[in-house]
Amino acid sequence: MDDVHDNHSNCAVSKTLKIVGSKWTMLLLHNIFDGKKRFGELQRALPGISPKTLSLRLHELERDGVISKKNFAEVPLHVEYSLTEKGKSLRGVFNSLEDWGNKT
Image (tube, rainbow, N blue to C red; front, side, top):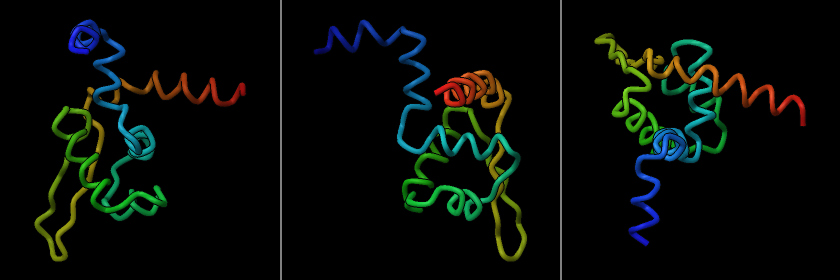
């Protein structure tokens, strides 16, 4: 089994899926492509996602450099999420998915 994992560790598709292949991640990113979003906005846009899962996916995307998180020291405290340049580079992937979906 380790041989299979080793064979795919340098595969570009495998690397991409490691970042965006988790449940909810693509839909989450799709929402952030529209502009900066707050946690509550994302949760309302993704019915069925738990706060824990949303928080985890946001953390993973931030860790991977796909989104950035900006904290506002206001009362009440709020946070905005936006795409980094790395995240914006996924635009072509989303355009291709949309084109494909429109044809089916």
